[in-house]
Length: 206
Ligand code: SF4
Ligand code: SF4
Picture 1 (cartoon, rainbow, N blue to C red):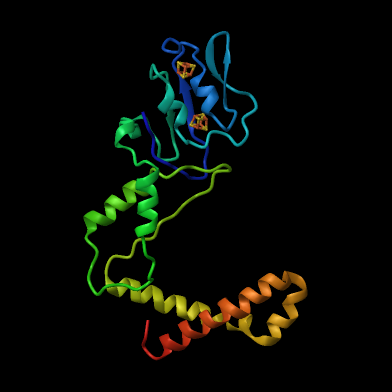
Picture 2 (cartoon, rainbow, N blue to C red):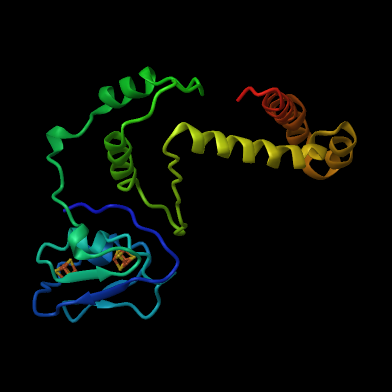
């Protein structure tokens, strides 16, 4: 089985059906929270987990007998889905070609994005790998030109309020604290970016 990524702040609940457990150890091996261990040939909750269950769901996904159920943090057994066949997975060349063909031009066409496509992207993103330590991931979706323009206006106002961070005096004062690399990054990248974004926005250009 496979599992999507879920992350929130509270711990998840793990329950183990001892009657179904064969003691194979798969669950304890995949739990990077050290939350599971094998005692007397049965899986049990460990007394020394690292964070508390982060609801990655991997123990539930790899258990061959369905003995583990993880609930909470928006995860349940219903979230399990069949592992796609290996021959359907992208190989090295497919991944390489995907990356080589992509372009990030940061400009937008004057048309709406189909909501079905947005939902497909969100579904795919929800299966992204999970890191340790766990952290929450939020995705904002603005549907329609008006909402993205309103966001751009808010962002421009936010940047305008922080313009002091790009002044020569501020950068000179900060250089001893944040070092040469940050100083160069602010002068060569952040300052021009602030200026062009806020100046153009003031002239009605997004
Ligand atoms: S993976 Fe399932 S069967 Fe194997 S030890 Fe864990 S709970 Fe028991
Ligand atoms: S859901 Fe993840 S963190 Fe929680 S017990 Fe299972 S493998 Fe460990």
